[in-house]
Image (cartoon, rainbow, N blue to C red; front, side):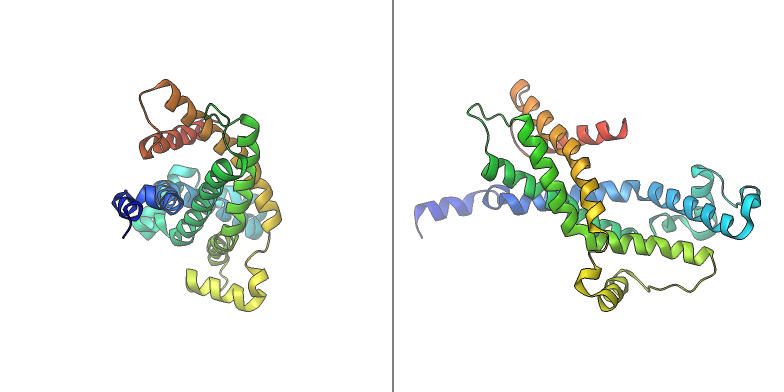
Length: 245
């Protein structure tokens, strides 16, 4: 075995396979974030579906007869009537979606930055390149994740069918994938992909541009180096920025 090959084997996995490591890191971070915030998403969806179903049945009197009113009372009602773990009902397709979406967009963005566009002589990544790279990464990430996004929405709609007294169409996530595939073929898994990628392009234009700007600032103005800790801190600051918008 040659010396370069031996030295490569001694490198950390993150340096030997940087793209794969970035995909896994982004996917793990997205999974943790989704598990933490999914009860809020479920509560919001349940509240919306309840309102739509009540209006369809009762018209203007639906407001007075709704069993849940407000996010907190809706969440408490789910816990009391269905159990605490039901706050994470349907989280599986959401996790699938975020792993593919977050991992795909970050790997694409890193590739565009390092290989396609390249940095300037001072290792700075110009703003206009961040904007274009962020939009392209969002398009690629959302296109890859569209099947999982479609299944997530379809599974959420099952709750509305249950409230309306209609039979459920899917037994689970994998059954939903199989049924959509059998009814619409491969193209059926990408239904609605055009507006989805348009939205993802605009969202990532802000998210990834902010991420790269924050990371560059931290590397230049603090003792931090360009490593996993800096990537994580930059991502958290981007998340805080999104939460305060």
